[in-house]
Length: 498
Image (cartoon, rainbow, N blue to C red; front, top):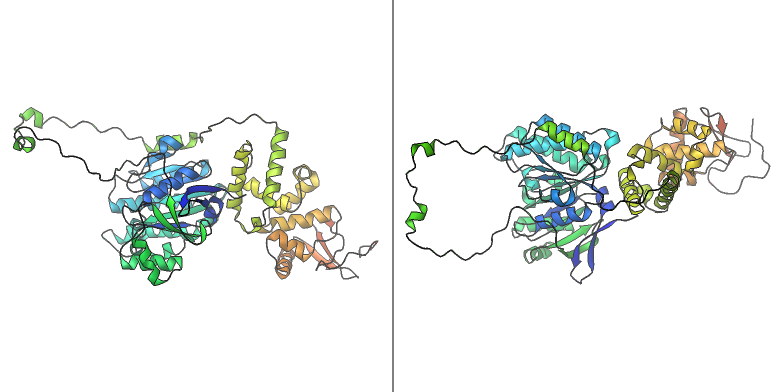
């Protein structure tokens, strides 16, 4: 299933939609000078996608903390020890909590160190917690600078390494990076180059316009168009947005930023002597010695960790209770719908799991019925043609136990062979195994089968008629003879070779 979110409108009035599932499999780069509507764009994206996916916002100016009241995000004050932030990040991934890391109270070097620690905690989470999440980094040029600045080399190295991990290696861990910058020239090229989707707003400097045109595949003479863009207008390109450069206007948002932009106000009417308004009167000694009001107490790291562990996403509408049989049937139907998507074999398992959870919400089924690991096994079994009822048989339990020692991408291939062996069916052809694996290459399927045989998981042989037989020693079963190339049918009554 494709999940689209509404980002606004195209120039011809048609809605501008962003494919959320495709965004999770790729990454997004947003560029625009101050005042171009870049933060407004991020807020629109966060508001529209909040019901469907976990969100992590790295917020250097505290602009996005207002999302907490409307959408249940937890605000984490970054003025803590780096080790505490790493622990919090691990909890965030484990409990799938949407959070905002507020860095506004720190200087530039401290912001880089704290953001690096938090991103590192997200990146190093345990494998069973690799759930899909959008990681939004505003003012990314602060955390991935193209050149050394006033901060120390150690802080720059830590922050740049964390941002590089997010954009280069985060996808396999379910982390989809969304970075926004005022100037492309100030952003490290190896970070910007990993983005597959682009939203380019108004910019005036020649070097930034040239880089934006290069990223969008435009000619240099077309770069002048970025000077003429209005506030809130962006040029979109990428698999999640548009196949060709497309101008869109970002829609309205429901929450407001704490940082109000400059606005013209009438000057106040002056009455009396204006010098008296700015003169500092002599204060009594006891007034000067009066202690300042105590600052509000900040919650401790332990309190925030407890809040993270107790967090539950808000449920706007209570779904009617369903019996276990109805839930099981609904999950089977959802898996069947996912398998009908011709692109499902080319999508990462984390993206398919996000698709699964969205479908569960639409049908009122509790998405936590299957964790990521359980979903991976159920999907492999479904690709192999094993339904939930058959998977409960002792024979299939043995097959699933053996499949646990097979790499994730080969599990469906092994289970398809196991099904044929336990049912005494003809051996699957190379084309059948290739389709399950997600490729059209029959030679690739033969290499996969050879890999399984080298590990002594299966044993392949050929009978007198040249038909292939695959045995699984751990199950004590073997397939019936079948043509490896899929051509022709097995002769009727053909006996297995001894």
